[in-house]
Every structure is written in C-alpha cells, then in structure tokens.
Length: 113
Image (tube, rainbow, N blue to C red; front, side):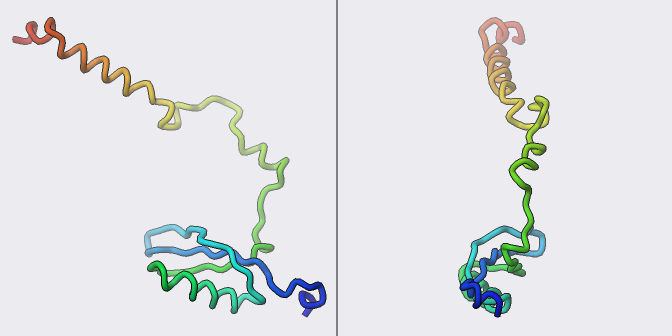
C-alpha cells in the first residue's frame, strides 16, 4: 500500500531465461508490474509463447545491486595483457600467410624435387 500512496503502483522487474539445462541464464527484457506474482505471470505470457525455455527468473530491479561509478574504475586493467586475448595474436595470420607464400616459391619447389 505504500507504493499506492507514493504514486508508484508499478515496479520495474527484469526477466532472465534459460533455454536448456546446460545454458546460462540470459537477460531478456524489463517489465512493469504491481507485484512479483503478476510480474512472473506477465513474463510467462510474453516469453514462453515465443521461445522454448526451461526456467525463468523475475527479479525486482531495486533488488539488483551494481557498482557505483567510482567502483567501476577497479575493473579497468592497469597493465597490457593482450597475450591473454585472441586479439593479441592477430599478427600471426599475416605471418603464417608470408610463410606459406615462401614455401611455394620456385626456389623452394625446385629444392624439394
């Protein structure tokens, strides 16, 4: 009833679904509902008829905690560790192509024969 007094009859909910037993939960959409039961019912009506899934989570947005702006700074990397990412090895494709072209030169082909 406090919500009705404040003029906030509807609350925001986030809907997550799981396509199969092995899949991870994925965020699907947000919705407005007066309570948790109605939010779950709306999520089932809107989502289950579109895609197959084995489970749904409906979470009140105000119950989700995130990092503040100043706390997000700790997530940035302080050092260059490109070797841990596949993008850090982008030069290998070019190197491999050069190697293959050298193998098919006339000089190398005559050497093998």
